[in-house]
Image (cartoon, rainbow, N blue to C red; front, side):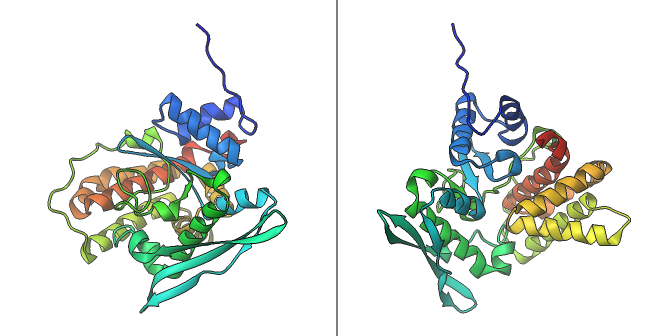
Amino acid sequence: MTTEITTYKNITPAQVDLIKSQIAVGASDDELKLFLHVADKSSLDPLSRQIYFIKRSGKMTIQTGIDGFRAVADRTGQYVGSSDPVFEDNGNIPAKATVTVNKVVGGIVGNFTATARWQEYYPGKSQGFMWDKMPHTMLGKCAEALALRKAFPAQLSGLYTGDEMDQAGDQGIPNNTKDINPKGGSKQLEELLVVPEPPENKVNSDETDKAYQVAEKELDEGFAFCADKNIHDNIINHLNDIKYEETPQSMEVLNNFATSHPENQTKFQDIAREKNKEWQSNLSEDGYTQLRAWMVTLNNFFTLTQEEIA
């Protein structure tokens, strides 16, 4: 019996082991191979969080950010930019956004246009903080992702951005029902808390939305604890930024902070232990699931340090 060894152009064997333990947690051998194949083919780095492995209800989805889509398109040499989103508004909310991507095909610039509709992508109040804060930006990014995938199907087929997946449900595909978080997880924090039975008769409301924001802020404060107020405020700002989009700059700042303040991992985990029952009681099922995903994201900054990435 022989063991097949798969090699990758852009991923080393050491990185494969790290990706398996920290990024693609819970992946089967076949799922890991598929995820690594897509990451390698697209030249997107899982360790820099340019591409994500997401698994919910036993099904895998591969996701990236809009910057990752643009990078993949740019590397083809055929991408010549895209239009600003064109919106059709319904009051203060965009009913739909339309983006056109320009691609050189046979020496001629072709136009690839796609439209994203608010009712298909808005994730609801429990997960829609950034959507409520910047509705045009969020819907515009979804429309751009659709147009880029339409223009570059060979490179982007099967990839979705986190913004598109905000409202994805248990099936793990966009535009189905709702609620999936585009951030990965680690086994360490999953073992920290006991998974509760789903709360009964919970509904999304202004009260539960406020409870989620309070809980999230408590975790953020534990992560960003620092005697220097300027550093603390800067870290809080970067945490808020990555809730919108995980830029390389913010991720580097947060990784460096976690490396230099390892004691803060215990601080926010202690908060999680102390507040866990209260959060289960006060949050909707979807809100609690989202909060656990955010805990995992914070924990990953301590378990996946810059030294490990290098």
